[in-house]
Amino acid sequence: MPKIVRAGLIQASVGADAPHAIDQLKQFMIDKHVSLIEQAAAEGVQVLCLQELFYGPYFCAEQDPRWYSMVERVPDGPTVRLMQGLAKLHNMALIVPVYEEAMTGVFYNTAAVLNADGSYLGKYRKTHIPHLAPGFWEKFYFKPGNSGYPVFATSVGTIGVYICYDRHFPEGARALGLNGAEIVFNPSATVAGLSEYLWELEQPAHAVANGYFVGAINRVGHEQPWDIGEFFGKSYFCNPKGQILVQGSRDQDEVIVADLELEEISEVRSTWQFFRDRRPETYDGLTAL
Image (cartoon, rainbow, N blue to C red; front, top):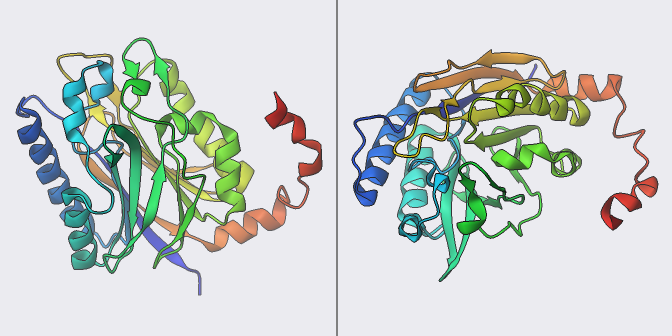
């Protein structure tokens, strides 16, 4: 029998009705996502990924230490604890991107991975940190990740995580495949323009090169007061052939759901023997430059 996994992605906006005080805004976004998680559960989703920094706006649009108050410990912070309860309640594995405090003054852009029984499996810390104009001032907020490229054995399969800007770097995407990932989730915050063209190019290419499924998540809307551009949604799943299976809208809060047939991985890898035909002994120069 084919192993079919019902997987989901949440894309959401901050919205004009969101409060301005940071603590109230955070609770507003958590409440919104709890409702969307319940919707995903009603649709039978078995593994679900939230968007990058899901409980707030993309505050990296400015450099202001007031946003440091958004940090939490992982896994001991209140948001991850809440999500552990929801994972267990709904029998659903969850990927939960948060702003992590590792120690006083040391912060990471992190995704906690929770199993369907609510247990904490581990974390991935965003490796590649952009600092780009206009409005992507992430080095002000995040230390580059030191977690490597782990995979997590969940109740539905082996999960890998890559976060937003990471997707521009094929090396980590390859490492996730070599480490055994069957589904790689990329929670993101990306705006229209050149990135929109790359949005449907790079990640299907990673899926093909490494023979796994990819779930790509992007938030939606124009976030005030910065308005660095349109977060254009269009979250999607693609298969190991690079084909987009299902895609979200440009401007709606929604749950994107796809049934992933994991046996496609072995079919594709048996056809395109990219892992067999690799020549790692010839690649030393890639890390010497």
